[in-house]
Image 1 (spheres, rainbow, N blue to C red):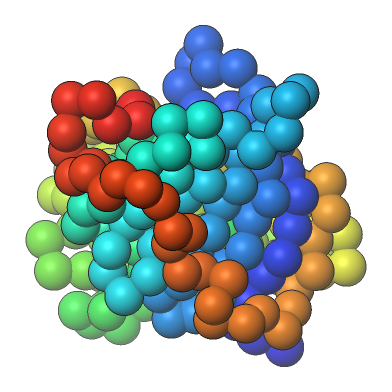
Image 2: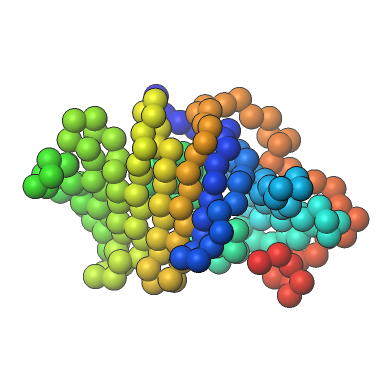
Length: 211
């Protein structure tokens, strides 16, 4: 069954020296995300994407920041520069969907995995599947010969990966996400992804915005 939404609790570490943060995650296809980041004192930051707008709300500042949901802006909160559609795919436990420019190539590895290489305009996407379960183990994307994205999916429980790693070598960025609880295909009210009211609304690109 395809996973089209998700409710979960997770820990996220962004960057090589990043600290682990605890988060509540909501995802709903085709383009809605909400992530609440918690500190020992409670909600520290709420981040969401709705209708192409990325918003961030640190309650202590009583200010909401808004901007375009670009890969660069998403990287500030997720640790890797991905488009919204790609973030949703990855959070739902699959590699980003891509439009193939030709027929895929199937091969097997010495470890007994299936390797599928999909040609893309100007590059390729390669996905490795476990030989017995056919679960996705990892994926890579290249622009020409340059590795631009590396993903790993591990700790499968009830057919869903509870550990996900993201690396964008060209941007020297990456993140590791470990789910503590996951509810795939959760029924989520669209209102959950709406930005909360705030006394002030400033551009996300503002120098005083969250980073």
